[in-house]
Length: 307
Image (cartoon, rainbow, N blue to C red; front, side, top):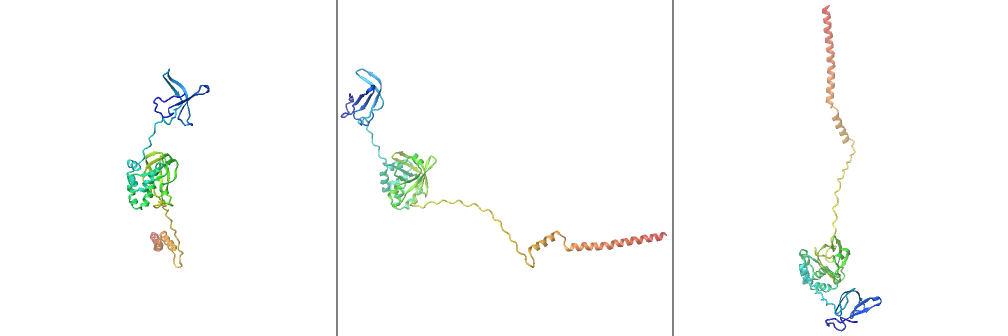
């Protein structure tokens, strides 16, 4: 049994539905122009019935028909420079537009999988003196260094940390223009060994193209010197104790003898004081004897007169 599409606009057998009744009462529906591998849809229940006029049936899934499907418009091509100019990276877009080799390479890759990192305008302004000193080949290489020939969502960037290769690698012979991607909190950090930059904004994240704004202009080690880690300043050393050496005393005189003499002089009275004390003692003895003699004479005289 077939049902023709009411409008009659379907070409050939399009719009016809095959209805099959199976054993056990099961009924299935299949679009006539559906592929052989397309699954059939099963009858669920009757929703509304008007005899000889209308029947509304519920089925288990949508019937697939290539002709019945509305045509899907092809996505509009992405203009890289226009996209960058609208979101944070107008200066970088200008550099790409001015470099035909870099622009054509990036533009040809974007539909097959591309992740582009664009430095914000302030980062480009800071880097411009160095950029102007590069050769034409070096400018092309450093612009392509910001493009990875694969699609990476921000989640993939933060979860799959490691080394990534860039479009500059495939365009410059015998050079490995790569950098490391590391997780930095909720975002990603790009480390070139010369400098590092953080992803600050997501401009576009729609497979096969992802575009991220970054905080600095990436500088590849193939064009610039690798930044060396600065060693921490050594801790100040504790002051060293000076060693005192005793000089060997000479035969004539020694400092130790002099020190002993000084100590002796400070602790004991000098020679003149000793001589004065001795003299006082010698003078005191005759005075005492004379006093006794005088007293004895006076007593004797007194006794004589009394007699």
